Image (cartoon, rainbow, N blue to C red; front, side):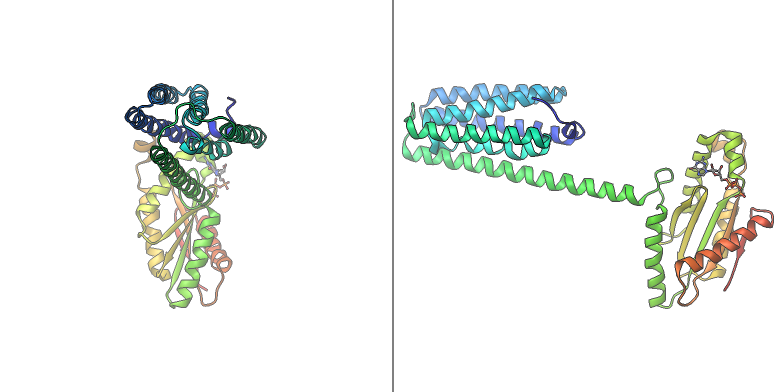
Length: 346
Ligand SMILES: Nc1nc2c(ncn2[C@@H]2O[C@H](COP(=O)(O)OP(=O)(O)OP(=O)(O)O)[C@@H](O)[C@H]2O)c(=O)[nH]1
């Protein structure tokens, strides 16, 4: 069977398929015992073959021979359901297992192939039903036993659908969480990215206005970062950014916000902090970075310093306004010789 790109990109899908083989083999072992007890040896031995096929498919999934495994599973289900119906009749409920292919096809195949296979599956299903209308079962079992087999099959398919449903929901929500994390995180430093930090800061501004608490921001820029890149290479530059992110984070409180604001620029948001305290925090960060032993950590003899602009949110002020002031303060730090902190009040 042709595999789609989609399913190849989803190893989780194959793990679930592999686990389903395990469950199906257990069910077939139970069926072996049931049909032996019902004195239907042919169906009992069919289940032994089924267990062998599922074991093979399980092994093939483990070896990443997914195509072979899928062929084995399809063959088993198609033949087993047909044999069950031919031998003991439609009311045995062996046809329920064919329904399991509907979600499997929808998840793994491209739309065009899925539609063709679904139509073929439907034709097979209806064909089996029609056959059962015209031919009596070859090895009928008692009416009570037939009801028992039907309820057993119904319960297994019910259980498998529920299992697949839960797995599907879990997979989708974990993929969503991952996407959200990716969409809000800077890939290099793993800090909030600019878009996400903007949202968080807007919320912080609203909170600080509502509770009439101070809030300050630090705009942090690496000094002569271009030179660092030029002297040590872009990759070392990246490592500096990653280290800086961790070092700055270490100087902050749990609920302070930090994000990568631009290439070599970071924004720190300090809730419930006035400008004097914010200036002290900025000074602590500046000192920590300039005294950090970069040579030990990056195996390069370099110095890294920061220029920082500090501002405090004024009443009814927007994010842009407070950032503008922090940016002006940063500019003053740069033009006064860098490696310094400047605060700018309204
Ligand atoms: N390695 C690395 N470099 C980056 C990244 N983003 C931006 N840069 C570099 O950061 C440098 C910023 O240079 P400039 O804006 O001239 O500033 P500067 O050299 O830090 O000088 P001053 O800010 O005036 O002290 C540029 O060379 C960018 O290529 C990044 O993700 N990784």
